[in-house]
Length: 359
Image 1 (cartoon, rainbow, N blue to C red):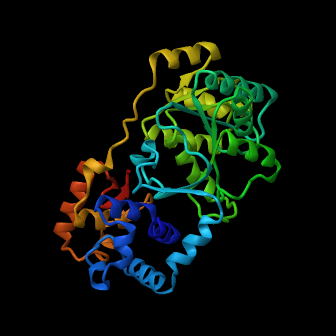
Image 2: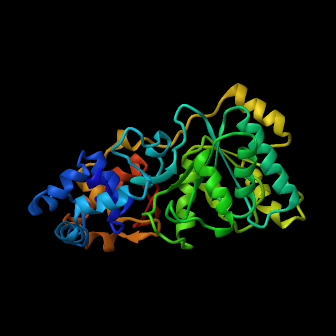
Image 3: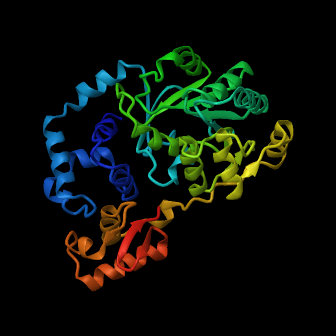
């Protein structure tokens, strides 16, 4: 585990590249001891990536850092481990590793994410608590983000019903945010778990919260949005859920209420409607959950050329000319690689000769 902890500490190496290492059967330990010349055979590594790895190997004390981490009494798991949540393995950009206090969700049980507005109404508060409690009494685990408002209400409803709930944080697992939720943080540790992909001690930052939303939806079988404004982090969670092939349900609201805009907009896009909590819980308990249809990356392992080109792409369009300057291929060969990536569903051509990741 100490080498996996080292690889996790390399935060400038993306999750996507760490997953490609895993797909290519290059373990963290193998990477740590890999001769420098062999690093150049890993085509999806840039020169900056190789520099980061070499400098870290020269200065990082594996034994010392691992002992210091173990003293924190925080759980640690990576995608190299069997204990890693299966639901996360096939989502886009899965976290290479997770830190947790308490436990991870039980793989044998179903999970529902309940998220919504921080400045929720009294009605939203009641619905979130009642829904979480009703699901918990059926043995369903509740996932949320421990934020103010609906997230906190969902966790509380679950705990009051004696259920198991899990909070995915936008900070290190050992950093309670917001601070006013300390009582909730301590309760969740005993009846579920606190989860984060961020290194222990990491303070919350605005950019971390959209990232953690993909984990909230990824750990869940169904995502429920209780209340959400037009621009809401909850809608980001819903988008991730739909990309991951998860069912999204919403609580409908009055069209004159700003807290209902996001939910009503999702209804327009085809989200399910919860009009009666008991019927909803009964329906999903009796009929089960739709299995995730997200593409299984393990069945679509990229070859070296594809992996290199894919690693250079992002979710902002990149011109073919820019790409050609970064790869050792002729333009015709680069077009062939891009076409293969498009056929596999990894890449889209937004406008002629401009490409983005689609997974």
